[in-house]
Image (cartoon, rainbow, N blue to C red; front, side, top):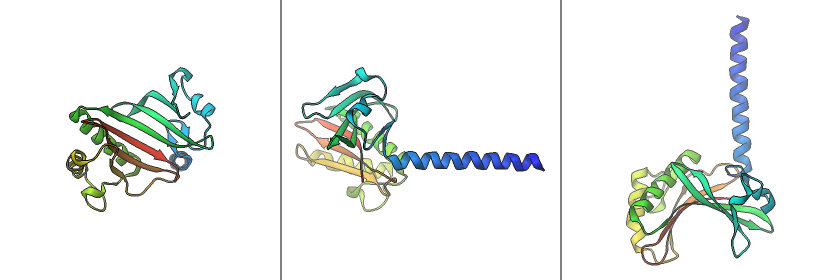
Length: 183
């Protein structure tokens, strides 16, 4: 009887600890060890410092960040010296098939992070992966350069906003990204 109680207590304690840990990470906001409010020096201290580069505007980026079934580039955006938003660039180029796959991966990422995903052009409320991709296919060809097609978490995680964009560039150029921003 005592062993059974101890086992139950240990399972409960482990589950409670995991829940607290998950809640604490979600409340901090951010991605893969980078959290909102970090300085550029703190960002560069995560992982290999040689992988970071600086943009002309002073923001920074890095390559080879894990993203769903592959890797992405990541850009860090600062306000008054503190991290406000990260953008994971899942794809940038002219290959329509690769862009569609990146949009599918972005949907999977959002669904994993927040559950239900909403693509307004697919209708109000939760969208299926198929409906989100059909809306992407319908909207993207008509977008002017610089315009975006978006989807996001129906219910945002605590401490952050999470959404995906497909931005039309000149010609057939498309950039697919997942963004994490402070609420």
